Length: 75
Image 1 (cartoon, rainbow, N blue to C red):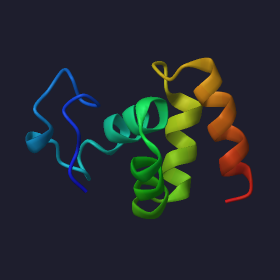
Image 2: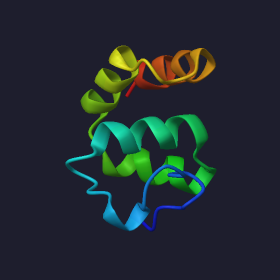
Image 3: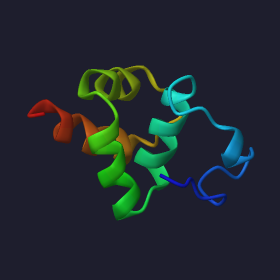
Image 4: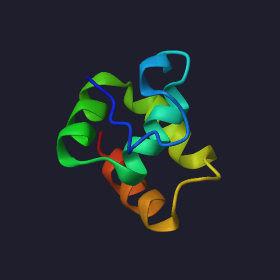
C-alpha cells in the first residue's frame, strides 16, 4: 500500500515502516483514511493489535474510537 502524504502530513510516508510504526499507521488510517485505506488496514493488521490501539490511543477522536470499538467487537 502506498501511503498518502496528506494522511501522514508530519513525516515522509516513504520512511514509515509498517511493522515498527504500526500503531501510528493504524491511528492515522482509522481517523483519516479513505475507504480503500481502511479496507487495506482491515486486511493487513491483526485485529487484536487494532483493538489495543483503539483502547490505548490518546490521539483518536472520540467518534473514531466509538466506531472502531463497535467494528472490532465482532472481528
